Image (cartoon, rainbow, N blue to C red; front, side, top):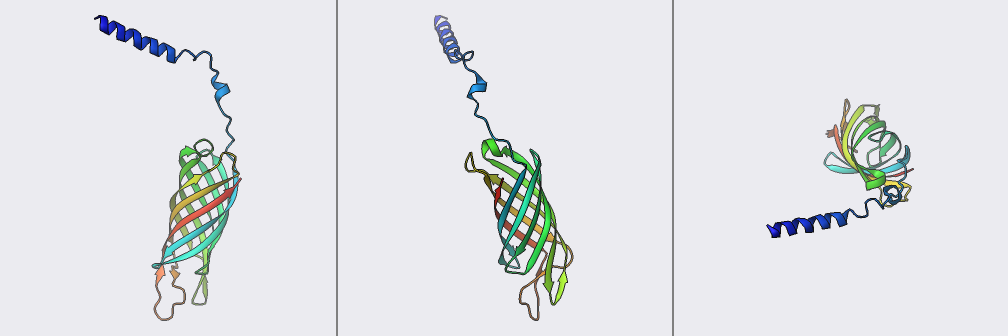
Length: 187
């Protein structure tokens, strides 16, 4: 019984010494101020695209507006250079983990809609396209005025599919295109 009493007294002394400075510390003083999350961002994207069993390379420029801590809208204009293909559209992003300004990363899912323009056999087509994807925003430095974004997108083209470049007799076409986006956004 004496051993149990001595163990309890030692544990109480250790607990009291752990909280001894609780009333002396000011938690507001110790907090480092964080910057506010920027509402406007401008940037560019480099996008390797996979379709028709081959790779294409493209780029886009965009402006993003952060509606809320968890939502943003993105207007963009882009192109795939290896296949003369032009695109303009809008993406909605839902940020579901992290906080960019404190944890330096933020994961998101995206839903997008866009309009393509391309030429196939001397005719121009303007089919709509939808996109779904997953990505991550990363802020590498505390005082940086830019963020890096890595995203994976799957897109489906309604209507006229993308034809194979330089097709002569038999053509292959694609409605699905997969992208791996590398972006830099400034704020």
